[in-house]
Image (tube, rainbow, N blue to C red):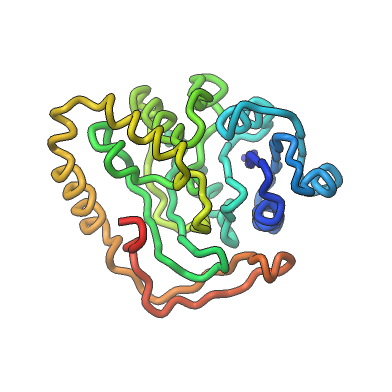
Length: 278
C-alpha cells in the first residue's frame, strides 16, 4: 500500500516546512506528499517548487477544501490523508497505519489519535478519536482529520469529497457523508499526529465562527435541546475507552526553532482535557 498525503497551503511557509519534514522522514512505507499551494506571496514560492520531497502544485483555489479535493484527484496512492500546514506526523505514523489497514482489509477509514501542542511545540493534551455518531457530530466532533486515513476507493469510487462551499468547517460534512454512506470505519488506538494550537488556527477566526453558527441553526430543535445529553454521552464514551487514563509518555516533532531535526518532549502527566477549548 502506498500513501498519498495532501497538504493545502496558503501563506504558511514556516509551518509548511515543518509539516513537510514530518512526512519526509516516515520510514517503512511508500508515499507521496502533494502540496497544493494557492499562490502564496509569503516566500513559499521561493523554495516549494524546488523541494524534491514533495509534488508541488501552485495554483489558485477557492479555499482549503477545494485544494484538498484537487490533491486527492491527483493522488496515486492506495491510502489517502490530508495534513494541514500546522500539523505533523509523529515518527512511525504511516507504518502504524499501513499495518493496521493490512490487518483490517474490510475497514475503509481509520481514525487515530493526536497530540495537541502549542506554537512552540510544548504539550497541551492528548486527543483520542472516537467513531462519530450522526446525532451528536455537530456538538462534539470526535475526530482530528490530521489522524484520519482512508482507502482510495472512498474518494475515487464512492465520490466522498469535500464540499468547497465551506471554507473552515467542511470536515464535519465530509465525515457526515461517510456516516450516511455507511463507510466501514474504526479507531486505531495509536497516536499518529500532532496539531499545533497556535492561536491563529482557521477554526478560531470569524468566518469559522460564522459557519458554526450557520450549521447549528440548521440542526433540528429537538437535537439542540439534547445537547447536554450528547456531550455527556461523548465524555462517557471517552471514559469507557480509557481516554482519561494516560501514562507518562513522550513525542518528537519539528519546531520553528528546530526545523531540521525533531525535538523530544517528555510528558510526565498527560491529560485528555484541552483546557482552553472546553
